[in-house]
Length: 571
Image 1: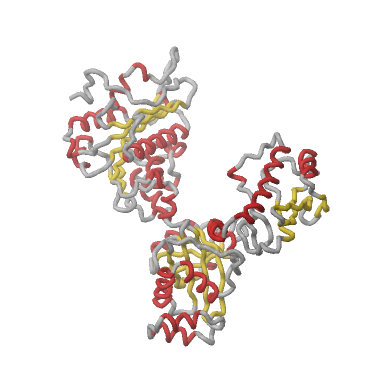
Image 2 (image 1 turned 120 degrees about the horizontal axis):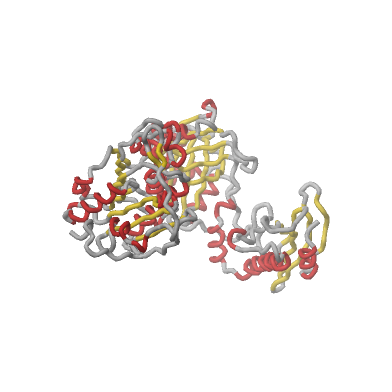
C-alpha cells in the first residue's frame, strides 16, 4: 500500500482511486484540473509500496482541452507528463505529506504554463527538451569526433545492466583514421565481440547555432527525410545549405549517417539508405553537381530512401569531455610536471582531464623512477606497468583512453633542478616529487633564476606527517616559499604531544610510510586546484592543507608571509 500521508493529500486534491494495476504494479488515481475553463484529465500512478520519493510518481494525460494540441512541451509521445526534475528538488522523505503537495502543485503548474505560454515560449520549451521527442531506435550513436566527414563503425556490447536497453552502438570516428579505430576498440576489447564490428560507413556531422524550435502542435518527430529537411531548412537556412554540400561529398555509397548538433548541445542522428528506385538518379545528381533544387526534389521524395532511422546520439568527443570542466580548462597551456609517483600519477590524469595537453598546449612529465610492486597499492597505475619508467607509463596510461589519445604528453627522465631555465617557455611548473630535499633545491633555484627564463609560477604538492595531511603551495614570489612553509612553527602539522610516526624500512633498504591512497588523491586534487587558480589569475589562498589522519591539526588555507632571512627565497 501507499502511505496514509500520501492518500490523505490525494483526497484533498480530489483524486479518485481507480485500481491497482497488477501488470505495472502501480496504484492508479484519476484527477482533473481546471484552469481558465480548460480541463486536464490525467492519471497519477504510484509504486506498489510508496514510502519515499526516490522515484517520482508517473503522470499520464487522459485528455487535453480542445484548444491544446497533443504535441506540446513536457507532454511526451506516450502521453506521459514530464513535470519535475528529481535532481533539482528535495522531496523530504520524513514529510511525505508536504512532498506529495509539492508534486501535485508542480503537475498543476505544468498544466497552467501550457495555457499561459506564448507560441514562441512553447517553441523554446520544446527546444530545451528536444532530444526527448526524437523517439529514436535502439541504436545509440557515439560522436567521438567533430570533424565534418567521418566513418561510423557499428558494434554490439556485452555485460551492460538490464536498465540499459541499448545493445547496438555506432561510433563516429575521423575518416580513414585507423589509429583512432584501434584506440577506441582496444578500450572495449573485454566487452565487444570482434565479429560484431562492422564498417566503415560514411557519415557526416553538421552544427547549427540555432535553437531546434518546434511549433506547438507540429507533427513530430518527422517520419521521413522530406519532413525533416523541410523543418531543418526553416530552423537554419545556412546550415541547410551546408548540409546539402556535405551530402554531395559523402553520399556516393548506399548508406549515410548524419549527425546534427543544435544550440544547447542537442544532438540527434539520422540513418539513410537509398532506394533501388532512386539510387541511380541521386548518384547522377551528385556526380553532375546538380543544382540544390534538383537534389532537394529527389530527397523530398518518399521513394528515394528505403531507410530513415532516427537515432539518439551521445557526445564522447574530447571537445565535449573538456567542456564539462569549462571553468577549469587548461587547454593551450604548457605545463611541466616533475614527479609521476603516488601524487604525480593522479595529478597528471587530473590535469589532462581538465585540458592539459590539448590545443596548442603540452604536458611534460619528468620521472626516471621505475614502477615497482610496492607502488601499486596507492598509485593510479596497475600491474601491467611494472618495471616501466613512471613518466612513460603514465603517458601511455592516459593516452590509451580514447578521449585523451590525442593529448600532447611528453615523457622525460629525471629533471635537473639546476636547468630550470630550460623551462622558460612554460606557463607552469608543478613539483609533485614529495622529496623535501629536491623540492627545497628546486624552489631555491627558481627564486634565484632570471624571471624571464623560468616559469612565472611554481606549485608544490606533497604529503606530510607520514601520510596524514595533504598540502599544496603556489609560489609566485609574493608570499612564503616551500622552505618557509616547512620552517614555520605555526604550520607544523602534528597536534601538540603527538609523536611523529617513524619511517619503515624494508629488507631491501628502501623506506616508506604506511598510508592509503586517499592522501595521494587529496594532494593531487590540491595540485590541480592550485594550477587552475594560478592560471586564472586568482591564486589566493596560496597555501592549503587537508588533514586526513587523527594526529594532525586543521590549518586554514591562507597566504603565508615569507620568513625573515629565508635562505631559499630571499637571495
